[in-house]
Image 1 (cartoon, rainbow, N blue to C red):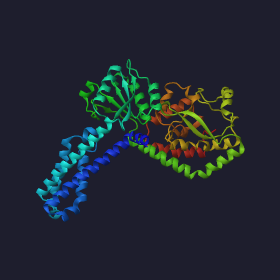
Image 2 (cartoon, helix red, strand yellow):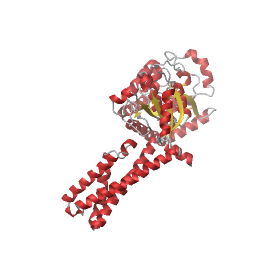
Image 3 (spheres, rainbow, N blue to C red):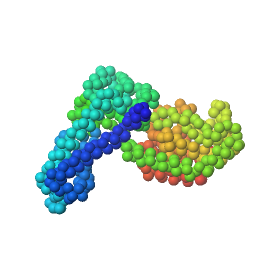
Image 4 (cartoon, rainbow, N blue to C red):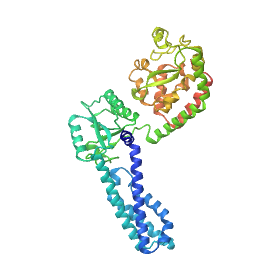
Length: 458
């Protein structure tokens, strides 16, 4: 049970939501205490209680406007709390003039504000002290990887140890000669429970290298925070700072912000669940036909390379005989794909009779809806390629791995197997640079049309 709790609390979104809920309850309690205490002493309980819901909504909205539900640096500001309470009191005074029967007089408003300020301040202080106590015990801290030169890492670690913070160091990587070991970082992110990366010395990295690092981290849904240099601090305003002994910037990925990512994921989940439900009769029929017409498993599971070179098992209906992968080496000389990076031949002798039908109608791809549901793929994106094809790709071609792979994509609606590999890469890069939700929907609709016309399918 404790392990489950640790896993849940390691997710930033859940921690933020829980923090906001607790603080809203704290402030609602404080505002209610102020209003009810004032009503009790002023003898206006009946009049005031009927207005309490409106008073609470206005007060909580003012607290939110003063960033009191934001991250630690904002919500711990006593000036912001005082400002919110004074604004609340001012609006109560205005309300008492507009609605004389509300029961709020000047004296009652001042008493309400004083009680609300004291109660909210006290409860918030206890909340922050409780958070620090939890962190000091080492509970529910975010597993963090630190990247930087040795001296910089040691200074950061000392700062983290000196003040209670949400971060628990689980690994460190060297940043030597302005270079970062990207394959090693990917390996650590995949093998550990790291949810946060702190980078020291980002200014030493080339722009291209920094963006590659950022892409690798973002695609794994890990937060990247940067310790800025002195010049950066003088030239810009920090977008994020936390009481951990050093200022930190939170870095976002330029092409796909959190809202867009959430919308795309929502489309994937709804689309995959709907597809599996609506197509279940067809899927069961295909399962039966494959089982009856050729020996072997119903599903073909193959290791494919996904976003940022992350390997996953891709599911398809088996459309070939069992020895298909072994026989591919014998057929390499007949490869019709231009450049030889991917493997494609018409009239492939390894395809079963049922396989020819389901490939022609692209039914063999439908089990990948499971991959979409698991978050390994998207409905729309660059096609994931087998390890054999990936190993023959150049570095320029690997830029297409900057997005989560999809069941369909821009190149599938522009010719599919009739296009060269270079055309496929060009169209995938165009998709990555110009992504939008409307583009995804457009590609899905065009895919249906391409499937019905058997365009480029073999």
